[in-house]
Image 1 (spheres, rainbow, N blue to C red):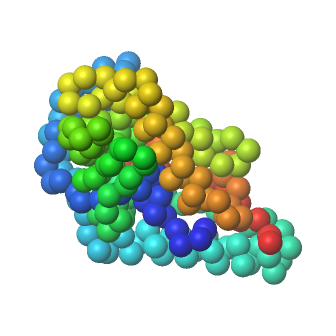
Image 2 (image 1 turned 120 degrees about the horizontal axis):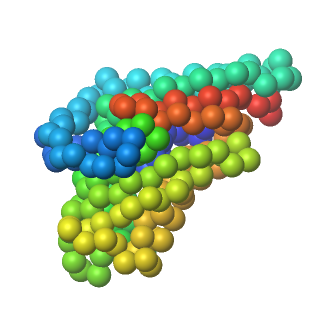
Length: 198
């Protein structure tokens, strides 16, 4: 998994954790109720994520020597993701710069928030996305994006979606991991699949 979960690479790619930020808890009807949350970050959690990536690397080696796929199941927590994001710094794509990125997971949804600078304007941003599987790889579907209190313009929303997808694609570019299922739950993302032989 080549150097690995650069924030699920998350999923994302990315930076300092703000403790005690306002976010939203999403219920099954899609309504949002303001909720005070505290996102944790620690060296131990970042190391835990690295260890999970090492487990995948070892499974690929085992699959290669056995010449058959090896089942894999990985559960990545919000704390692990945010701890890794805190180590990575800012993310740039063209004129768009994102920093102080943090992730929170809800049932079937990932919320990503932080600070963005675009065309010399700096604003807080929030976006929500889902993950599905296509041909063994995660596919991002950006559900919403807003800067400050305004919805992101379509060109910027498309660019944000591209950044998310690029981060995941980069993470898994040389991976021999084939993903069969992704489950997004409160506080975690579960990947189920197999390590393929080289």
